Length: 221
Ligand code: BEZ
Image 1: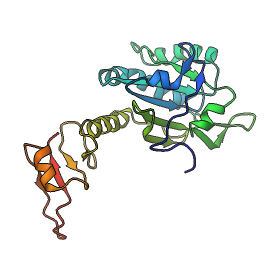
Image 2: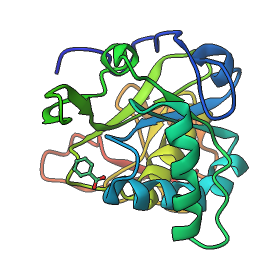
Image 3: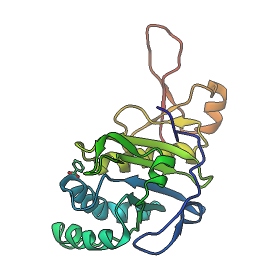
């Protein structure tokens, strides 16, 4: 997949948003941020996604993770659409900004274009892309979904929790399949057993596998 990917610095674009002018690096600041695109305002799946994200906003805030939406409609359209989103999910307040990218320059630079999804003029719409950006302004993980598939916010939160867990342990742990907070993590392959004993005073458990290579080690985090 060409374009912005894991490890790349997010372009420091400056765009109008529902909460004023935003420069992406300033917005990310010293923490983590999720920058996510949606194909168009006033469309069904996007409305459910935005409402779902509004409902999860407090979870991301608790973790110090900021939210930043983007689509190719303009700010006036976004502001009108927010009324629908909030009405669809009574009690929800859309507290995060949505950036406007009417000329679609930003979605190209952010690798958020869906070439299969076009507007009435035949111009490509944004995909449902999502980048988690770290304090160093690099992309830590990305989702890339097409217009027909709404994202699962539990999975976004789970992926963020995984990323924050790995970062807290300086990349010495990773999270296994279907991991969720509270589960054991695995110790990364670059960590020797000796180092692991120092790093994880509660110890670790090595899965007994036919290869006897001892590479699958679980530890509490
Ligand atoms: C939607 O949000 O439902 C949608 C947006 C663009 C294309 C297809 C579906």
